Length: 586
Image (cartoon, rainbow, N blue to C red; front, top):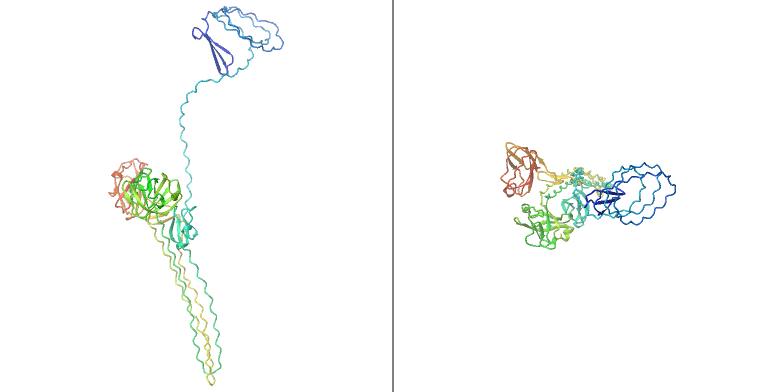
């Protein structure tokens, strides 16, 4: 709001009937307070003079005179207010506004009593005065900060991204001269190279290293064409007739045609790749130690040059405070494990367990090791406190040997060559003539055609594999586990471990659980069991061989539709099972 002009607020009890005067220009308030004497009675209003009727002047408006100095404050008493009648309104034209005279000093006499005369008609509105200059900025303190607004509602969850493309299978990339020529960068899982100086063995990349998958053969070459038959022998020359010549020897029997080549045996199928576990845990590198007890959540090497280490010590507690003492106790000779940086899979060390580990229960494990390969910072050595992943790659079951190719049929016997036909010598007249020369041996019969037995099928290495399944024991490629939904029958739930690795069952009765057909020792096996509640509480009796953490069995959720998940693991053919609560009340 912008107000211009002068306003007087009276009769405000400030001191003794003091008057406070305000001037408001462009939202700028200037106040002044004058102390005056006691408020006198208002004088009577004087009679208003008659309005003049003179003609309106026509002269041009004179320039505004300079403001005169403020006069001295008057000391006369305020006159009484007049009470005369209001004069008639003049009809003359409004004269030009004269220059403003100097403001008189404020009187200090007591004010007269308020007049009671009737108000006159409103005079014409004066022209607007010039706008005053903007006042100085106020120096008031900044106001208090407003309270924080209410938090907005959570945004709508974005839609699920599209499923990624399926991973590639095995692809034969080419041939290299030796192991040192295998590429170290740009490889993908499933790439295969044939290495010439390794008897033609194929090496497959598993994401960390090149693995020997056995000999790879191409198909057998076709049988070469049969050579042309030899030329027929020239007949012997007839001698002069004399004594009957000795009958020429019978021509040699043509050689038997060679038997058809035996079909090549199909090459033996490649041995299945070793299976691996997918267990990994978070640890920190400790390069300040080469012996002693590792600090909780750390790994150390017994050599400052890490890749020259012969022992690695691992705390039984991870950097995430997980106690994996039972799992570490399963590590044995010839198992492999990988230590890699959490944020860079190209920085790693792959080790083989070269001897029996020393396991200090509930403290740490000391593992004798031999380096297999390394890369990135794993080559130069991880720095102290590096965030690492300890990946257990325990060897799984060896895949079955591929079937031997069918043996090709034996080729048929070649035809017998024709008998030689040397001519008989003429009868000699008189003296016995010289014996005729023995006829030239007939040409060897044509070689029998090559046997046509079918060549045995050549074993093949697929160029693209999504899943190779070893029935009943392991699967390679993209892992797919089998689900079974057994029902509770007569209070018993039987889990046939030869049929599935995930069992999904509605818990609708008091139940005794039975595990059957566990793989024999020393194979390591684990499976998952999910109970779906139906709204009622039922007791579950577990096999006596199951061991729970702290000896405390889990309390089963009874809320309708909720799911409890449990995982069981054995390494001694089911004599002992380790039970884990994977999650409850989902």
